[in-house]
Structure formats: structure tokens, C-alpha cells
Image (cartoon, rainbow, N blue to C red; front, side, top):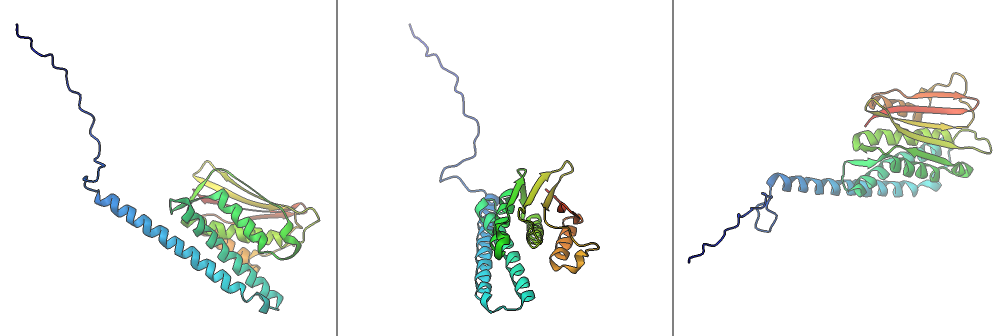
Length: 230
């Protein structure tokens, strides 16, 4: 008797994009990878260029005798360092477009402290931040604002137990808020922020972020805050 073979149904695997060496590459994906590589290289070069500028400026440190010129020189170094840190962390992030804001501000605070001469560099700076990723075009003005506010706090006449707190918190409206507070002496009555180059720059950068720099000062210290989009 002839026995017919029993055929089993054949189940084909689901379609998958070809990944082998013979598969044609997606031109758009290849172009995106190429642009990402170019972006990382540009950021790496920007970081190295800024570090070179910082090194060249530091060579002139001993030649500056005038106190006002020395203060302006030191603040310029802090501002360049803020940008150098940003480009370094952008390069390290792997995305090339966003950085961890808390980590960035911690590095900024440390750079400002080490760039401040004398005993003021010993004032503790505590940074607390919600987990926030921020893009280059928001991080750049925000980093400069942070550097200016911390510098301003460090140059207050501090009591023996001075401190600076920096907090970054997510808000419910698609924005977040940076707060820098200290327990230094209050700003003088009628203090005009436009008379201080650093604070005037911070106010201009706050406007770029869609907010105004809010500053409050009394006997317990000074608090400055600004919101920014995330």
C-alpha cells in the first residue's frame, strides 16, 4: 500500500531588515551617522580650542597688577571654562546634542571655586538637580548664568560659615528652574544689577531663555532664580 508522506505546514519567519554584508545600506541612515560623526569631531575641536585659549590666557596671570583688570581677567577665564566644560560633556555624552544638567552644573561650580583666589574657594557649594537632559542652545546661556551667579555669591563678604546652594527642579509647564542662594551679606539698598557686568550679562541671557532674572536679598542672604525650557 502506498503511504503518502504527511506534510507539515511551513512557518516563515517575520520580515526583518537585512543586516548582512550583502544588504544595501539605507542612504539616509548612513548620512545621519556621517553627520553625527562630524558633529562630534567639531565639538571635540571646539573643546580643545577653548582649552588652548584658557592656557594662553593663564600665561598672562603674573603680568596683571591692577585689581580691576585682574578681576575682569579672572571672570573671563570662568566664562570660557563654562563653555569648554559644556563642549567636553557634549562630546562625552555620545549624543552630541544634550548633557546631564546636574552633572554640568556640578562641574561648573567646581571650576568657579578653583578659579577664585583666596579663602573664598573654600566656601562649600551644594548642587541638587532633578534628572534633566538639556540641549546645547539652552545649556550655553544657562551655564553662563550659573557661573555668573556663583561668582557673584563667592565675592560677597561671607561670614565664617558661608555656603552656596544650587538647585534645579522640573516645573509643570515644560520648563525648569535654576536657583542659586547663599548666606552672604545682603546686597546694598538700591543695588543696580546693570552696574555689574556679570549680572547684566546674566539678565540678558535670562531673556534669551524666555524669563527674567529674579534676585532677592536680605539679612539672611541672597537668592537668584531663572526658569528655562526643557
